[in-house]
Length: 334
Image (cartoon, rainbow, N blue to C red; front, side, top):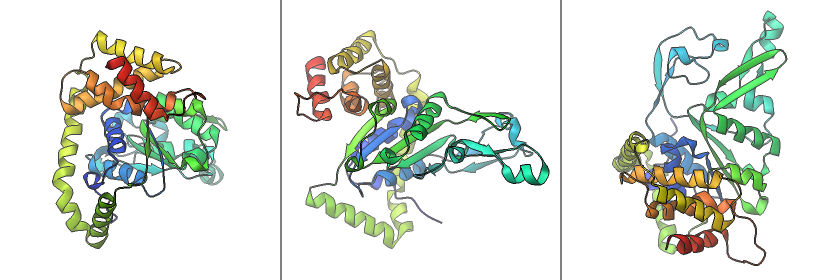
């Protein structure tokens, strides 16, 4: 059995870990884009968070991980009503993948051998109620990324081809990672990701030593290492579950809504997606911290995550997007 590295044992990368936690609390955030050097723990963090979350209950044999028998799509012909527990799915989407492999397609073998039109589910079906992870997302074909973002936003996959008309739930957290040296994402696609974070290899020697120490301990004796970190992972899990319960009751005042709007106007963010994402991220953070209401401090903590990738390029401003957001937050919120 392959073990995932404990989420709480990841050294540093606090912004990346916070972004992952917020999406676990509020899936409507629209996923996370993580850009940075290779070997900075991007894929490790995704798998670690999914392993940390409680197992999901699914109907045995259901191809879309339905929780109840009545939720299983009719085309799947699921005979069982028994349910089983499974780990939160993390599905990798490889480069060069075809659209049929992503969305699903006609089951050719069944069509040839039995003369029946049947649907063969794709990666989106397997990712339902879990995570869809794309490494090197900036190298993925644009039409595939467009498709994924549309489905991630609607929560439903619709396939109509070869006389088939099939739909099924596809609610997942989309996590994309990449190296900016290998190309950038189109601005339209950047804007569709809810949160964005830049990660870098640690420059502090002691921090690098601690990364090596923990990874070596994990590789040498995974069971002992997991046992050592299990209490801290359990604490994060309990806080995430409690935050999910508190989320709907976490209030946001008109003053907070005004702060969101003023921040986005000051930064020149197009559309209203920035405000909505900023509000949702701040509410998820407030629920995680148990404050009962969204505060300006919560806005300050999530502003860079929600807005830094939505900025227009300013040729007269050499500051990075994160610096520009921090500067604007200081001007607007004080």
